[in-house]
Amino acid sequence: MFKGKSIYTVVLTAFAVILLLFSGNIRTHAAATATLQSALIQGSQVVVSGTCSVTSEDGILHLYAQETYMTGAQGVEVAQAPNGTAIFTFPLNKNTANSNLFKKFTIVAIKNGVPTAVSNSVYITNPEAAAGHTTPRRDGGIKGMLPAAQLLNANNLKDLGVKQVTYNLLLGRITNGGGINYQYNGKTYSFNSSYVAEYDIVAKRMNAQGIQVTFIILNDLGADQTLIHPLSRGAAANYYALNAADQAGVEKLEAVASFLGQRYSNTGNGTVDNWIVGNEVNARNPWNFMNTGNINQYAAEYANAFRILYNGIKSENGNAQVYVATDQQWAVASGPSYFGSRPFLVAFNDYVKAQGNIDWRLSSHPYNVPLYDPNNWTPTRYATHAQNSRYVTMQNIDVITDFLSQPELLSPTGAVRTVKLSEVGYTSSVGEEQQAIAVTYAFLQAMSNKYVDGLIISRELDDASEIAQGLAVGVLAPDGRHKLAYEYYKHAGDPNYLAQASALAGVDLTSRITLR
Image (spheres, rainbow, N blue to C red):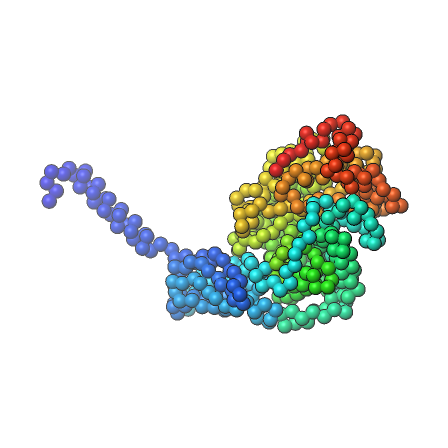
């Protein structure tokens, strides 16, 4: 049989046959997998799709709807599909006790007689498809300001050519007290009519001037701590992490998101185009307190709450944009009270993408380092153009937008996410000329980066408590006098004022610009 063949040839041939049979056996018995790829609203239904080679002992794959904090086979079954199929269709049931708008979905199979989670989990990623109050945006330009509440009736913002403003919305204020009843998902929630009226006034007065409004959602300490994360209670902080970790917190946060999205979508109370979730949340101890040093846990808890707000707001106004909030600490090593913005955003993005990518945007505060130095146009060792830069200031905004331009950070449509420079200011304490140069350079740098969608100067009017710290960052003095920075910001972009600012700086400011 083996005539003419050496013993080595025979052995090698036999070995090859064994390998072939063995590899075939491995392919035949490869581990079964189940992967969900999308959860999309289609009309009044939700369609969840994926692939699945897992078999369930009863011949049926079960799709469970789960709350943010649930794991394994917890939750409620909402749909079924036969083994070998991973397409599930079921009602959205928006604003009912059985709503699926905020749920995550997981395939469950019967294994050894026990319901067992066998897939990843995905959330609905197109809540805008269910929006009933979508309204046109007021995208008129990037020049922005944090207005003084006592000057809302003044003409300063219009005179300055401001096209957008930010305003703090405190959850502890609006959710404690009554006057406004709101029915959502089969329950009644009360909102404080006096405080809500304040925000109505801001939105309407700004809109009347053609100014776009961004509300910053801040979780302050109220009498009812339902919205405060369990790991954030019992400590003194400026603001606290939002609670998407238990049923009471999830339900109330869903109602808050829907209420805000609906009320400020051209329904008679003004329109809010943008929502920022928190303030400098990477600085976790002072601004988004949670008692954990684990960046992955922290980012996941923030992301869970963020997604609820995102789905709630965009399911009312599909044109609203929702922003993550970070500060100027970029690639600094995490410390006992903060995480670097860059590692936090990596952890946040990884967690979000794993459960369904959404169109989140970034809010950043590129203050100068140190804060009391208004010179933002002279290069420093603190802010470089490398991704390992310790800080991000107006000198190196390109570091943020280059980071967001990476393939793994792109939006669901493949676009680079926009950045709102939602708080940045420069003191006049060392001279009004220095402040005037700084606001001129900041505007020039922002205009030179196509991914920047807003530059918000942090004070219209000087604040007494900040002045005591050497931070007179308003463009108006306490008595209402126009500082030099007022005129330079008013004329920002004007070649004549740019030339004057360059002369004051002793350098052509356009030579310090990084185009993107």
